[in-house]
Length: 263
Ligand code: NAP
Ligand code: COA
Image (cartoon, rainbow, N blue to C red; front, side, top):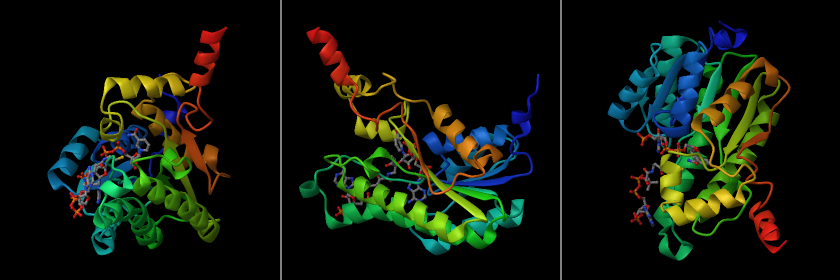
């Protein structure tokens, strides 16, 4: 049986920067399933081609570094030439590693800020005149580090906080023609990000206890949040950061387990 959602994004063009693996690839796949023409990009051209094959539906995989304005602008021009003006642009490229400030060179800090924050500026600044307006929807993939300070994450905290503010400023500057929002995923299973941030079982178990939903999220759950924000159901939503995080940012649910233990 088909439902109206099966064709929700029919006729739309979507570009996903950093869409060649993990969460962003999951978003790209879902967009394609719902009828969008989809293009993804990352640094590695072979990985981008493999991602496009995995997405199917005539998706294209391009390569460009979001730190290089000219390169990512060129990628988006190619997308618009091939598929027409873009209705949806996702900025999701990111880099991360665990390191204390004193274990991080100036270049290490700059590298993460450059990919995450400057990269998001480059993608959004570079796409504006290639958008199908009014009605275009932009989404930045941010993270809880934007609002919760976290040891070993100075670079990501600074970069993602900057992304959240960039989203709000762009919502003000580009409304009413373009909606600009963010999605802040919580810990998502089977991703490169969590391999880096929670590399062992003990860390993972501690994570589950703190989360209201008592589990990590699924890539598909973040993808559905992206579908919602791009859909007519979100037509009056701009400048918001949608937490898709099982309640991670609400607070620490493990205190309840402690209290139960004491009862
Ligand atoms: P991932 O699989 O490592 O995906 C990163 C993507 O960005 C890849 O397509 C990668 O391809 C691309 N990329 C990296 N550096 C780039 C650059 N300089 N220029 C262009 N593309 C670049 O990561 P993930 O864990 O799924 O995370 C995806 C997003 O979700 C990130 O924004 C991350 O901060 C956010 N997030 C993740 C989690 C989580 O649980 N994983 C939680 C909160 C937020 P190439 O390597 O080929 O460039
Ligand atoms: N601890 C401390 N410093 C580190 C580090 C770590 N674990 N990993 C990298 N660095 C430093 C490097 O030493 C270098 O600094 P230096 O020149 O002073 O030595 C700087 O970071 C840049 O590293 P480099 O490898 O040249 O950067 P790159 O542009 O090739 O790759 C990274 C960017 C480092 C973020 C790399 O991990 C990456 O490509 N990540 C993408 C995937 C990812 O992180 N996914 C998760 C998303 S949440």
